[in-house]
Image (tube, rainbow, N blue to C red; front, top):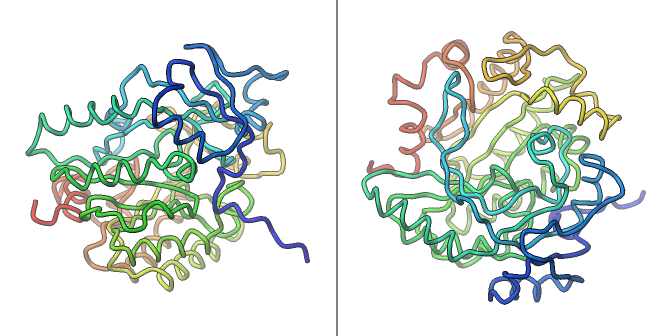
Length: 375
């Protein structure tokens, strides 16, 4: 039997690097080019790095082989774009780039972005200055900050080394915790860092079937959990995100298998939080997903339009998914681990978990307690 290729490090999919001209002499840019050892070319400022014969999103297949190193001329640091109709955890987003070399069938970025290449922002000095201004201005506020909203936090880390910069920065900030969320197993740069407990390393998890067929060029379940186990040994707190949970034939066996392996591999007390969220998507993503991945069946279900305009499973389907998975997690998780819903209604909270977040000060307070226990 032919051995399956490992995608522990999806940056191996890259073929070429493009550099915005004004960023060429940045020390950080040069470090990335030296580490990558890939062909590279210079792009005039504010110009697109390349053109394809086909339009977006058809060109995503080729675009994901190209990395564009450029400056972010907008904000690096913003609140998570949650929806007021659903319970939000008051997360803060640190935008370090756009897109990633992995290719998940359900990825919302396919409908959100309109450029096929991967972008990584290299004006890191501006990023850190912006963080300083925000965190120092509110020293009594607790910030939970993540880099995994518009890109994978670690998929390019072999080349960028960004995790080391951010972990060491957040180690000195008493009012902030960083979450690095990934579907890779790229953790080499995390070894030996003095993180002071201010960085949580997180993995998206799913059933083995979904991970294999719907999360292309991503690490396997075993690879992700082994990386998590190693990070726990290095003293990092961990998090896991079962999102999106997908209703497919056999999910009643697939998700329990993942949960069983999770707690066999990773110490329960190392887990700060676990989130649950059922598949939801912008309506136009359905057309994109079916066109790009004709072998996938995840969009051929019954959906309704949620209060946020996204397509969601019917409530009874979501509740069925949540009840089984929440019960299995609750049986195995440590008492201090926060298990919560991402973007769900109070009614779902009450029906599945038996309470609403307001009873404990809201989701933000529940999560803060796991990483700021004295708060």
